[in-house]
Amino acid sequence: MTVGEDSVRGPDEARRGTTEGNGCRDLPPGAGQHADAWTARLLTFSAGAVNAWGFLSLGGVFTSVVTANSALTGVGLGGADPTLGALAAVAVLCYVLGAAAAAWAASHAPRGGRLGPVDFLLLELLLLWAVVGWWLAVHGDPSGWERTAMLGTVAAAMGCQNAGVRVALGARVPTAYLTGLLTGAVAEAVTAAWLNAHTRTGARLGP
Image (cartoon, rainbow, N blue to C red; front, top):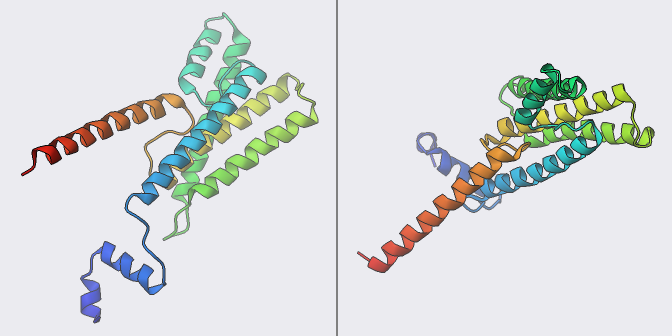
C-alpha cells in the first residue's frame, strides 16, 4: 500500500491494519463498552459496601451520597444535631476534594497520553487500605478526631473513584452512588427491550 493510500484510510481501517500487523485479532464489536459497563457495576457494588460501613462505623453519615449528606448538614445547621451535621459537611468537602484531585490528575496527564482507570483505582485503593490499617490499629474503636479523619479519607477515595473513572472511561454512569446507576440501568433495559421487540416485529412482517 502506498503512502497516499494509507493517508486516506479511515480510523477504523487504520486500527484494523495496525492490529493485523501486530498479529492481534480485533475485539468483537461492543466488547470494550461491555467491559466498561461491568467495571462500573463492580465499582458501584464496592461503593455500596463502603457506604454501609461508613454509615454504621463512622458516625451515621455516608461516604459518597452527597445529597443525603447535604440534608444532614442542614439538620446540623438547624441545631438539631450539630455533631452529625459537622461530620456530613466533612464528608461532602472531602468527596469534592477527591473528585477535584482526580480531575486535576486527568487534565495534567502527559501530552499525548491518557490516565486509565487503573491509575485512579490504585489511588483509591491506597486511601481505603490506609483507613483499614488505621481501623485495625485502633482495634475498631477510633477517637472522635480519628473517626472524622477516616470519614474524610474514605469520602475522598469515593470522589476520586467517581470522577476518575468517569474521565478515564468517558462514562456518564456514576460509580459511587446508586441513584444515577439505577436510573441508567432502568433506561437501558427499557430501551433494549423496545428495540428487541421492534426488531422481532419487523422480522415477522418481512419486506
